[in-house]
Image 1 (spheres, rainbow, N blue to C red):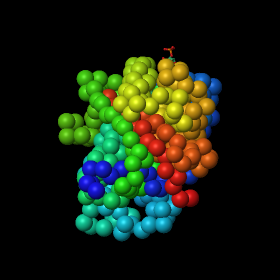
Image 2: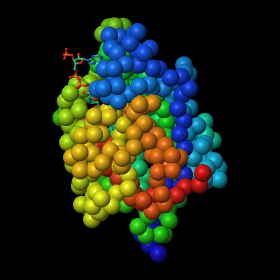
Image 3: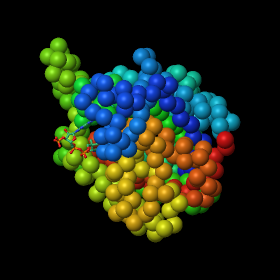
Image 4: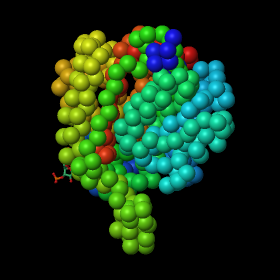
Length: 337
Ligand code: UT7
């Protein structure tokens, strides 16, 4: 059999979220906001905040260890590591290399980060799939891990209420079986709208200085209304395009697992696709927007809740800074618990 015929499926999944919960009530004491405003406008009630010294490589390593444990495998069984993050531990080396060391992965494997903000997990899945179908890599860890609390301006009420920290990991494996695992996908980007959601300081264009720190240039800034508008349109379109590509009707999809940014975005996308919210599981209420970690967190929760069944068609879709977006249709393969 030629290696081009290999399929790639999710063999196991694991997550890790920090213990500390930050509630809307606490935020209301920090900025001029209210539990009612945050819940009504975003669906978020609380989010997790990483402890000092608890970094994306630490959270990602814990999520990955859980996935490996569930699969009954060890770090030595991993052939490739891709980490999706917009909040790397340090500018370099990559969070993947730091995570490789913490997890004790082999030294003869490629380890690298993917930078596509909230779409990072979907981008990383696609990169992994294409590298694996060549037959060169049998098992891959794809991890979304974020510490958004480190780039949020805690005095800006328009953003600080939305984001949280956490990590999710999937262990991908190749199989000669047909029509399982990751089926169709698409990725896209629009750099002309990069200023809608960005962080302008701290990179090589504007290295940190006393002035840049004073001006808050190392914080995330967002034009929420515009991002919202793009997110709804692009996420709905991406779903439709992947379904058409796979010749699948939306009625055949058991679960839609979208990037968790705002419950009103999810409702608008569901409505455009003419799909009931009962097929759009969400954990926004408890985690807020965890960027690249949000899809694996939601996927794991839908699975542990007993929603996902072997053979179900699942459509994951993301949108984020860049702008970037991506969607993947997959046939769920019941992983070990
Ligand atoms: O993950 C990547 C993608 N990110 C997203 O998808 C986020 C997309 N955007 C959003 O989710 C929404 O746009 C927000 C939740 C950020 C904002 O909701 P909105 O309905 O678009 O509100 P808005 O920005 O139009 O603000 C409405 C009002 C404004 O007051 P005025 O100008 O009407 O007097 C804001 O100043 O609400 C005010 N406001 C707040 N009030 C209380 C903004 N933030 C807050 C707040 N608490 N936290």
